[in-house]
Amino acid sequence: MTGAERYATLRALYGSTSYTAAERQLIQTLYKELLNKAIPNCHCSNKYRDAVIELCVFLKNSEEMKEREFILKRGVVIHFNGEVYSSKNLTDEVARAYLKQFPSAEKMFDKVASVVEEVAEVETPKKKKRNK
Amino acid sequence: MPTTCDYFITQGIARECADPMVQGVEAEAIIINRADVDFANVEFNATNPNIISALPLATGKVGYAVYQAGSQPFSGSAKTVEAPTATLNGMMTSAIALKIPNNSPEVSANIIDKMLGGEFIVILKNRHKNLKSAALPGSSTYEIFGFYNGLRLSEGGRELYSDDTNGGWAVTLTETKAPKSALFLYAESLQATEELIDTLLGN
Image (cartoon, rainbow over all chains, first blue to last red; front, side, top):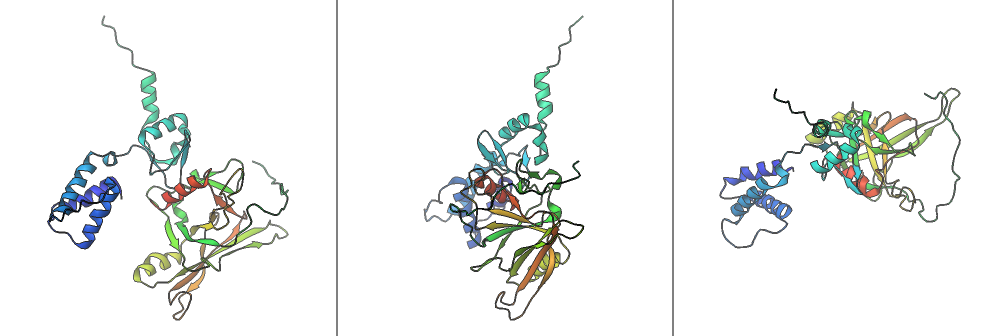
């Protein structure tokens, strides 16, 4: 599940006051995955709803929710600066640096922000017009 | 474009003491609709034309995991040579045998019906992985079948009292006239290849 899918799932659970066994299991799994800890065992009636709220807040503020500008195709990995990157762990920052160095690799991406234009803009700033 | 190809072997046939051959494959594999492969951007290893280093899929497409139970998964799968003729070089035939111990409407609609007319690529995980290779450790692990001509349904059925499938489906997908003896998937290291495999499955 992507960050957006997780958020949508949790938002759907947000309004409930009681959860089925499957929903409780899902909340536990997401809590462990995202926050790397178990839901506090407080024996309080709202602990799953509190967990859902906590997860929604966490996801809303997380990097995962930001739309990625560069997405590698499935079936492709790139090797860059001694690291291996796939669509799972490639950040926009790394993708930008990689494509600046290997612009022909653009064909291996499903989604590419305009790296070339940005570089061109930085390298050739517009001249200011003089007032006559 | 060259008009002739050389057919001279460039390596001796030796005993492999450090990394002896092991028969069979692992239980997990991947099946891909061949039409979903972005062939224009497939990349081969710079030095070995029998290694594919990138197998990109078209946007939004994924491969599907295949699991075969038992001590001899994919039993019945094989490669055979079509001998050279008076006018053509030798070719390869590959057969991938699959047991599908299920007969649900979903399996019928989503797998068997599609196999009736589809072309597929299967990636098997060999038990012999070539881990001691100095240059390409682990490069024998993932082997690609059906890349050139596609694997098509060649035989199969559902025997109601079969002990192999418990009354489910058994099919064989076959590729004929492939020009290479084997194609491997290897992205510079086994770890990187595992990452690549993971993305093929949509993870």
